[in-house]
Image 1 (cartoon, rainbow, N blue to C red):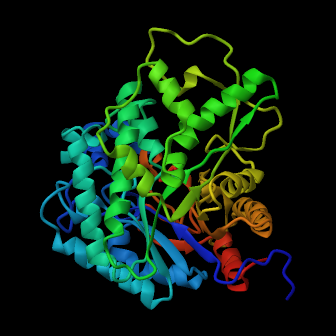
Image 2 (cartoon, rainbow, N blue to C red):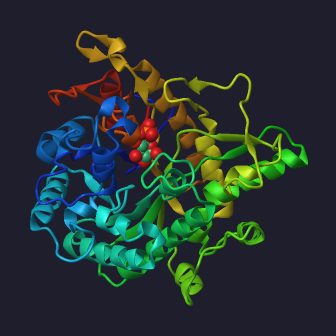
Image 3 (cartoon, rainbow, N blue to C red):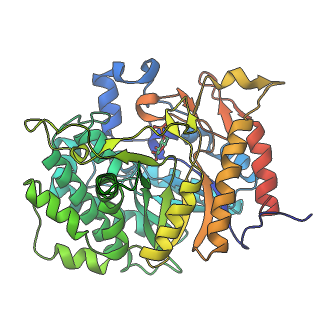
Amino acid sequence: MTLQYKFPEGFWWGSATSATQIEGAAGEGGKGKNIWDHWYETEPNRFFDGVGPESTSDFYHRYKDDIQLMKGIGHNTFRLSISWSRLIPGGRGEVNQEAVKFYNNVIDELLANGIEPFVNLYHFDMPFELQEEGGWESRAVVDAYEAYAKEAFRLFGDRVTKWFTFNEPIVPVEGGYLYDFHYPNVVDGRRAVQVAYHTMIAHAKAVEAFRTFDINNGKIGIILNLTPSYPRSQHPADLKASRMADLFFNRSFLDPAVLGEYPEELIEVLREHSQLPVTEKGDRELIKANTADILGVNYYQPRRVKAKEHLPNPYGPFMPDWFFDNYEMPGRKMNQYRGWEIYEKGIYDIMINLKENYGNIESFISENGMGVQDEDRFLKDGEIQDDYRIDFIREHLKWLHKSIQEGCNTKGYHLWTTMDNWSWMNAYKNRYGFFSVDVETKERTPKKSAHWIKEVSENNGF
Ligand code: BG6
């Protein structure tokens, strides 16, 4: 068969998940509480249909079957995260042996089925006790994270070679400290900056620790949600708006993680508005010396911006949005369910940017996907006919393929997500998986896209 879009040998086909969103068993196996367990206990009304993280998709009990499903659709790689509060209840101190057994089983089962595990250490899920100590605002929590990371490398580093320190570290900053969609629901620019900074220090410390372990061919990196910022026009004010959005939402983590330093312009603007974080001696060198080996790129939507229409309220909390307005481009293609624009070329623009400005770091698409509400509407003959998802993936893959042809160092594509999972405040509202999940029985059923991706993965193209 001649393929129009053939991917390089060994291309990583797979999907991504996170512990809190798939494991369930929140009160089982000795797991401690994380901020999601706590928030749901105290404010269940904040979650779609009042559904919380207690049982989610029950991967904790069903991982063997789920790994067979992955294998069946041609996965050669799979991303999971370790739940910090499961491995070390309370966040520091004794390791929970039941958790060690669980993660060992998952890792071994994946490997036995020819699927390489990519392991992420933190996906929005701070142990509750550490949040009570101040979460990422506290430098002591950074130390606890470093100890946790070391423990994970020691326990699983004999078999896991691809490690990630954080998934989308900007999201807890936005959700928890600016825009009120994650616990602890603080709205405070300065505290947000401190949280972002400490997350970066935690990342650098984990990278530094990783290098003291003898992990054969081991690579460590970070997963960032990169949202290219497109200006409304070429007017200098629009261009400046897009540069500012890029600084706050992309370069705030991308530059220190890959280049080893923060953009001067970001430091300047924070200084001007008295928002600089508290730092310690040696931090600059730590960040410089511990850049990522590999970068995961989560891409869902672009960011379109324009110059501000009105001056911000000078008495309101400091916000990145003081420097730009969001722009609704007429004629944009929307995923109306999630309210996100679909712009496939964005994936190519990101990769070209990484090639030209970030040393062409080894990367892969670590998340891309389409969340759709009420997917049962598309049920026919017992299967969800998700042609929209197939189109979505195919069109993104075409642009990714073009970027590879032009020399970008892109190694794989992971869909968000394997089977429908629990999405934070949205719970099971929008479905993203190759497999649908019956929330009551937890039964998995392949969607049309599952059959399609099997063929694409097995042919290494389409
Ligand atoms: C990414 C996250 O932001 O997007 C996932 O890494 C998340 O955790 C996914 O579930 C989809 O977004 P949402 O908000 O629809 O769940």
